[in-house]
Amino acid sequence: MIVLDILTWLLVTAGGVFCVIGAVGMLRMPDFFTRMHAASVIDTLGAGLIIVGLILQSGFTLASLKLIILGLLIFFTSPTASHALANAALERGAEPLLADEEGETPSSPR
Amino acid sequence: MSPYRSISVIATLFLFWVVMSGFFTPFLLTMGLLSAGAVLWFAHRMDVMDHEGHPIHLGKNAFTYWPWLLKEIVKSAWEVSRIIVNPALPISPTMLRVKTTQKTPVGQVTYANSITLTPGTISVAIAGDEILVHALTREGAQGVADGDMDRRVTAFEGLS
Image 1: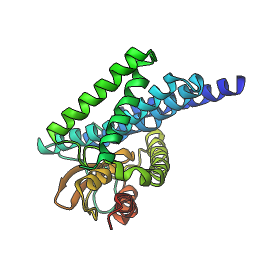
Image 2: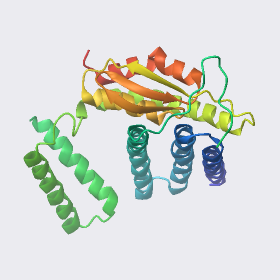
Image 3: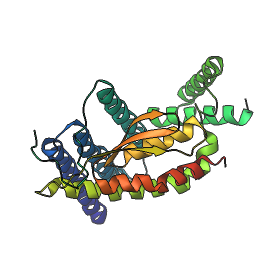
């Protein structure tokens, strides 16, 4: 099954690339809320592509069903956790860095 | 309490048990069925097995809404990735309030979670029928304000 192997390679590599992009984004973004946007790339495209790639490897087995359940778990819990985190930050008085009206992007990354 | 909901709960729990265990001996399968029955009984006693705890009525709508949501997630994850690798880091963080048109808490949670699940927008707070959204770019904020997702979630909710 060389075709499946190649597809898995492509999907898992792409997923890994998006995980790295998300990590780089977390370092480059200037404040808390914008960093969370970068992190959400990791648990959507990053995790998603890796899981699909692994499902192709395990075929029609129980392992695939478990991977699907794992994907659904991330699908339902990650937005809930992100919302709780953002909400807690706002409640505690974290000031979101906002772009001003003229369309200037905020500079001076911390 | 409809009997269909009870049947659906016990079927879902037992299926989950079988997938997790991976053993198919009669003794273990019986144990799994008994466990699922016990959890069903607990859920009845705790009164958590309602349209929120086990929303089977959303089942058929999920097949039209989830693929659309998946497409949106991929599209916006790609956009956010492009912003991150762009040396100029072209972000314009925006906060905005959007009205929700969903009638039930389940619908509202679905909408808020869909906003958060799409990279580039996060639902930060919910008050009444308004969601406070933080968007990475002005375009992303405009996308939420257009209300396309809101309409689709209300259709997914299937009450109107």
